[in-house]
Image 1 (cartoon, rainbow, N blue to C red):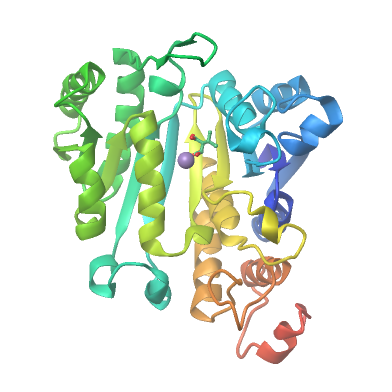
Image 2: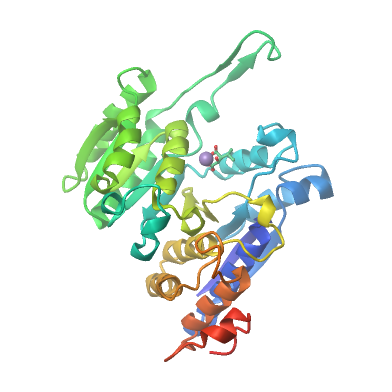
Length: 371
Ligand code: IPM
Ligand code: MN
């Protein structure tokens, strides 16, 4: 199979973690005889410094003309403390979502038994958590009309949704539930918001086409509490843009391992894959960031290409590094492995070059070909 991939490193540790995903994709290509062609584009601080524009037209063109996009991390405090102005990275990300029509953000959250101790929650609460959040990404209050008298005495943001916007993401979420434990929870504020009441009505109607999926409704405040009290109850969560933004971060915290979590943002014709974590400027250039969030995002990309066996092999390789405690500094601050070493180990596993006993001592010295 031949695929073109637009790669955007973005800010902070983005380049370091993305490089590991490229290694992994190359290992997959070599093992399964595929061809992945990469086009590198800029966005974020680098783009601002080079062109004065956080999202250059060239980047948009490449994204529109590619099979998938692999994004590193976007966010910088350098411009305006991370507040979305036209000059900063966040603004570029929002624009990219809108221009490409990436209407659904998909974030799976699973916990790893060997990493339970990292969670702020008790083991018995988080064991076997396996949920996925479908967050609407191009509508709602993020993109509704904004008004203000120059920020002097008043400001308003409009939350607006159409039936079509709800329907298209609802179909994706229901299809996903059908492949999973067949439970979908719509999270909203239907006790207060008109838009939530529209969501309920539309989702109930879509549900008629997915009779095998059990549909529940949960108010967002209750959902926020239930994610902490009993996250195991959730299978697929479907929600609108702003609520999804908040619940996504909460859900990622329960695992205690933000660095491991991947995401996909899809449109009808394209998709963007990126780790959930931020740009982590303090770690930038130190080879200590966790590459797994990006690598598992690359696995989601393979799944999107319908390369299921390939995606599973990447996930198996990641699982092997975690089980073997080849983990980065965020997971084990004392006995940690470097970003590049973890990327190499995962690639070696995919290439079938990990066998028998692994010489940990040499890997600790970063000699990654010493298996
Ligand atoms: C996210 C981020 C963005 C959002 C920011 C960077 C604009 O928090 O992807 O979750 O709010 O959507
Ligand atoms: Mn967010």
